[in-house]
Length: 541
Image (cartoon, rainbow, N blue to C red; front, side):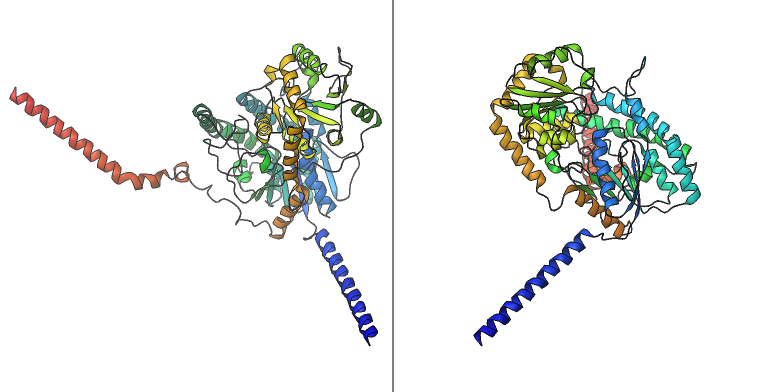
């Protein structure tokens, strides 16, 4: 009897275990299966910058793997086609970023550039490049296809920068929901679409590159830049881009200012650990570094070099936009002299030309390097970078201390975050001399344990998320599709307000009007008494 009962209990436990396993399996299948029907999605990513394209392209490729049909206008097409994924190749745009015989690059990024200069350069360059891209045979063929076949697109992904004329595609497609994507820290003065709070007293403009604790001068600088951005730069951007939108999408195309402000979501590839905190609306979502994925072993020759350093290796790269080979001779000589003073470290420098004269024995140069895989190698002890957001995210992810040398754009902002997190230091480009660079490198290497501990802590924080960045971005896109594009409960609704209504000046005027009237009455009373007193004094005399 006891044996039978025991056998029955064992059978029941086995059956319960099997049921639990089946339920777990079904739950897993439900999680990995698409939560919405397959959608047609158009992605507009026209900026010719490899480092910025990678996080942007990660999302549409993940959506294609989920079964959605994705069409992408991109400067960085895949080498091998993938299912559900169609590309419109505008990679020719990179030719306009390169120097040609007798000509200067459209936008020169080889020297330190001030914030006003860089914004004006990018506005001019974007207007020219957007005109060339939209007028290209590739894009014109796609526009003709839309006019002829009239396919339905359920959602548009858009790189949220200055090329707002691309939103003419919304007009062509009868205004499907718009999801903006940003691969920079959140903008402030030049925020063309989100409507998030921009308060220069404690929110640093990304392109100026201050911290969140500013002196009176820096706050004044921030307010002046905000006024300049809103009153001069934004109208200039919209005026030129509106003209391009009407040129390529028809005279009935509405203002791109109205279209960009009507976006449903803003997905940022940044995270709060890489920014100074600020208030944002709920339709602004930090998803994190979309571009960081699995790593691969280094090529054999590179692995041998990295592993041959007595104390480790140092990786030096100024990114995909700034060319090390274009540095002036004095800076190049100073850098090489400083690197030569670390013979126990093997150094890899991303260098775009065939060879570099005067190369020390502990330094090698390569035109291209697998940055993910290189930073993941345990022998890399230091990363010297221009301070782009993607490079900073990779350094933190792979727990490598950093020295930043900013040139333009968000880099001035990002290097302040390096120091704030305690994961390294930064130096200005104009301050690069043999001794200063040597001292900065020596500071990190001599105190490696402290910097390593700090970057490990930052890495742990950045990796601790409910879902991976790609899964988070996919979830929000599918959430929007499931809601049929209606997420008004997440969006700000104050675009209709005038500037004095937005700041509440009309309300303040009413509130303080009794005080103002009382003060004015007191002023008139004092004036009257003074006048009568003066007259009485004159009569007595």
